Length: 422
Image (cartoon, rainbow, N blue to C red; front, side, top):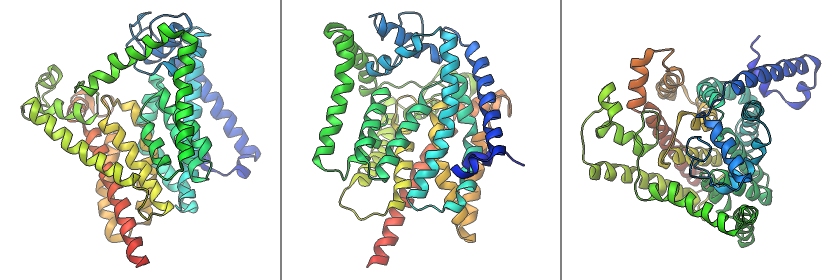
């Protein structure tokens, strides 16, 4: 019997002895996996950046000057204050604990995805099926994320938790969670704006209060001089360059601007691996990027419109679109950022299960593309095809297709309900 569906059982079944045994085995497996991954962490590993930032924060050292030798730190000062807890342990010990935490986050992401989709009206009896499909198609991204011990599972979990609180009319808790998530990594601000779109003024004031807390507490702990320098350096080393048009066309960067520069401009990786399609001027590439980005932002602002009629069912498409949009317009989108695909693919899988036979062929085409991207890797297709897929940014086009799909479904759903209402 396949054990994976046990993740999706209800609370009553989980209390049964055979499932308790399964949970125990799962926790042991998580512990062993975390131990070996944590043991292998090195100076230039991703987790070392967070551990070193916490250490530098507690010791009053610069957060953004690579003190300690780790790679560049690009998170807000509030996040570094939270990362202090890592510095209480050795690097390997902290990595082991955090890796175990990421395993648990994976389970909680599955749980809150299920809760959100059922709350908005997706069929509860189909939940095990569409969650399992999404689990298979997103497995690669979670595995990659856990191996690199990144923060994106935590950020996604907080974002989903904020959406869950919003859907059960606990907006104070939703705002608290989402503001904290934003000050760990700025991207959840788009989910926060979606939650606030129909709230009263006092909810906006609450979000400002919590945001002020997240700014002022690190400032107070570090001292006015060092705290102000932290804020300034965070802006000048990370936010300002991207605001001014910085592009990082690294082969493994799947942000939209990076994807366009990889295939339409000269890069060493592009010349080496032969994925440059044509050479366009930076101005032309920038126009293409801004046109697509403006379309995505227009879709986002359409979703934010507080005056349009909508049902709870549409919220799944709203959340999915926002998750895909943020990956596309972000300056940096590595593969391990794409753990958010689990939620999005759960929505797609549910639509597939409920589609008419004449519509199934379109889902088969989309499913083939999703499955290809979920399987491709240097160890499955060889380095040649893997580097080609990275250079051509297949994952970027997958994000763009899914963003368009979610926006289309959201508009179509509203139009259908409006016609029925009329």
